[in-house]
Length: 88
Image (tube, rainbow, N blue to C red):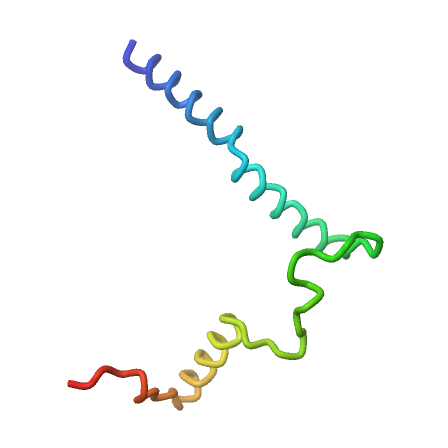
C-alpha cells in the first residue's frame, strides 16, 4: 500500500516537470543544438539572440580562459595574479 502512494506521487512529480515551460525550453535548446551539429545550420533560419553582435575572432569566453589555464599548468607556468589576492 505504501509503494502505491509512492508511485502515484512519483507520477505526479514527473507530470509537473514535463509540463513546465522551462523544461520544454531546455529540451528544445538541446534538440536544436544536436540537430545543428549533425546537419548544419539552416541558412534560411533567422539569427538567434546575440549572434549578430558576436565577434567570432575574439573568443574571450570562460572556456578559452579555462583552456589557457590548463595549458599553462601543464607547462608548469601558472599565472600568478597578485593583484586579485587579498592582503594579509
